[in-house]
Image (tube, rainbow, N blue to C red; front, side, top):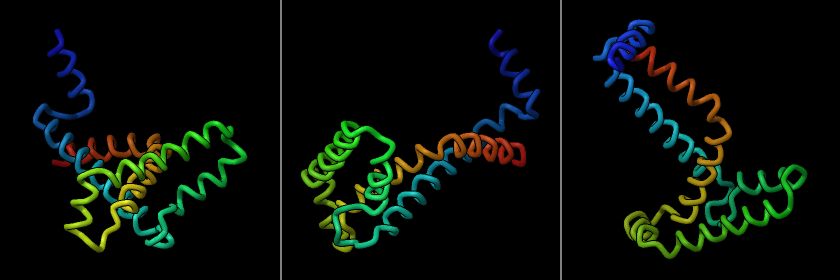
Length: 141
């Protein structure tokens, strides 16, 4: 019974079962490109590399003073501070510092958080877009 539903779904959207691996690979590649590009962008946008504070998070906190309640902002600031402390204590933090001395692991961690927050805001656009692009790519292959 389930097999018939899948076949009718694939037929309705002009796909074959052999297109599904292509769809998954394209979708995964697009996701990886989105994650890496937003992370890189947030890492490079930081105003002062030696500054531990983040440009994007500071601007969000300044704008959020009118929107978000004080307890939420305090919890967010505490979470970011805890993230920085946890990152500095981690073995991976030290490995990055030893292996890539030009890269600041604190800035790297904070830029990942910024990128994640940014992706959450644009997720209603990017998820359908990735699905559509994956669908069109699977059809073309």
